[in-house]
Length: 154
Image (cartoon, rainbow, N blue to C red; front, side, top):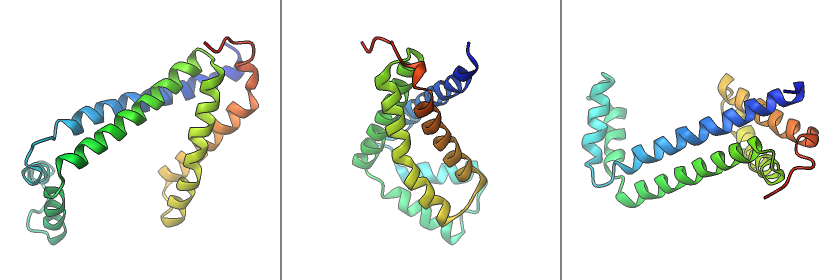
């Protein structure tokens, strides 16, 4: 493996991991269809040993109780789409497909303005780290086009 391919392997693993986590979350979310969401929220509060008499906890439980099946389905579809996108990028990058390079650059670049906005709202080490990682991914893929040259795009 060339030195320049090491970061590509990191990108592939990151996209694969995000895809798997999103897929698992979508299955967990879809399992909430036809459940009493207020009871679900109460069970979580008890599980995490939070104060059930706290005003904010009660308000949160009430809001969660209003979540309907349509919202759950919509969120689950969004998570499946996100999982599919990340898994497709991981597969394409692993196979050194030109379309995956472009897809990853475009999808990652589109997130950067939102990440900057989030950092302006509240600076955290995690938000700054994610922004730096995504900028590094875009820069790396734009700079190392030779990793994808001469590859069949099928």
